[in-house]
Amino acid sequence: MAVPSDEPVENAPEHRSFSRRAVLGGLGAAGLTAGLPGAVAHAEDRADPVPPGSRRARAYRIREQAAARQLGLPAAQHHDNGDEAAHPDLIGNYGKGLPHDGLGRVDPAAYAGMVRAVSGDEPGDLDGIVVDGPVGLANPHAAFTYGLVGADSHQLTVPPPPPFAGATTAAEMVELYWQALCRDVPFAAYDTDPLIAAACRDLSRLTGYEGPTEHRRVTPATVFRGPMPGALTGPYLSQFLLRDVPFGPATIKQTFRVPAPRDDHLTDYDEWLRNIRGHQPERESAYDGTARYPRNGRDLAEYSRLNFAHQPYLMATLLLIDQGPDAWDRNNPYLRANTRPGVTFDWSHPLDLVTRVVQAAQLAAWFQKWCVHRRLRPEEFAGHAHNHALGRVDHPLHPQLLDAEAPDRVRAEHGTLLLPMAYPRGCPTHPSYTAAHATVAGACATVLKAFYDEAFVLRDPVVPSADGTSLRRYPGPPLTVGGELDKLAFNAAYGRNFAGVHWRSDTTAGLLLGEQVADHLLADLRRTLTEEFDGFTYTRFDGTTAIV
Image 1 (tube, rainbow, N blue to C red):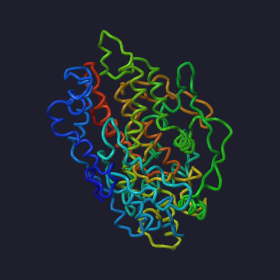
Image 2 (cartoon, one colour):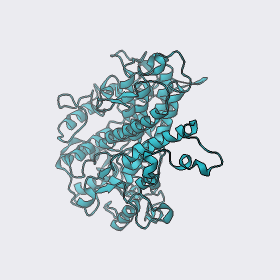
Image 3 (cartoon, rainbow, N blue to C red):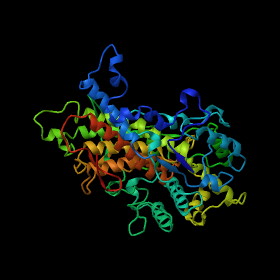
């Protein structure tokens, strides 16, 4: 389905009956090409005239030029993967929280009502969406919210996710089964653990697997890792998730309460069905009594559940500040200036931006989730696989899914093919693609790469002990700022995959979407600065160099 971003909305309330591009278009062509519009252009009508060459007029022009840049971009076209049209029973799309039949299939009328409410540029009757349980749908209004900095959320695009019946979706589901099975394996034991070895063999056989490999084989050094070089270098966890963080006069130790081993949820069919209908869980997590550094997939999943949106990147910023000016990006103008930084290009600048970019990233993800793709969550897919395997229904699953070893191991351990979830509530009640955690990760990591020297080598690297109670020195090759920021972005995002709530492609697409969000924000920021410098430079997740 193509979703144009500049069409007017029919039957919208009068005060909202405008398209997103019409909001900018209302400035008028004259305002964009000849002088200052609005308050400045009509200074004669004001008690306090604004001279065209004044500071106030220049400040207005900067905002006008930023808006004009966005208006000048081609209208975005968004395309889904075709599942909504291909499967009349809607098995390829998100439905959690809506009414479902006993086979876990969403009620078509309720789904159609949801689609009507989120189609177009402005929200329809969101409160009229029919839900089943008390949980409710998570904030579809955010898909339509406007921002004042960077690109409008509807102007950013990502490729469609893999289709329901394809080999890539099958491979991603097999990987999720393995991540659930391997949650309690310490990252430090990946080289020798037999369960990890079995996961590598199984994933290597899948033609649709798009994770990192070595000579087309998944190995303990690549399994459950991100595709960027930094995510593949050194220990599994980024240094920014482990080091003690200077926090003004205090120090934050990055340990936290973690769930007990084998604390998995939603493997009982009746419990699973209640869950996808939007009802509260019947039991909560069981916790270990010791605060630990994250040392395995279960710990990383819990970290990604409880951290606030930009916590990993706030901690990374504070750790980078502690490295001093030697870690600044080589384009920082104060490396060559006679004056000193204090507000711009110093510690307060990335601290501000790594927070400010979060809302824009989340709005971009929410638009893709609700208005374009509406991709089903892994827990929903696993329910369809379970019913298919039992012969209750015939779904068009790719044959590689049930031919793999992982589903058999899950069934032997839990008695069903339902995906063992790390969270009692399973997946959130909003669609899967793109992952908001990943979009925030991509945006925040990009901002930090723009301010810091990606080649700078971090001092005294560490790894957690196998039980997570202490840190020990990492003796391997040097770890750089750029590599560890890429790794941090993937770690913080992929913790959600270890929990079972996202697909691999949700994560990789989300990182790229967040990168776009940061790129547009940095472009607007550059217009506001008076220092002479060569622009913000950073390495994209695909390895190319960007200059903003």
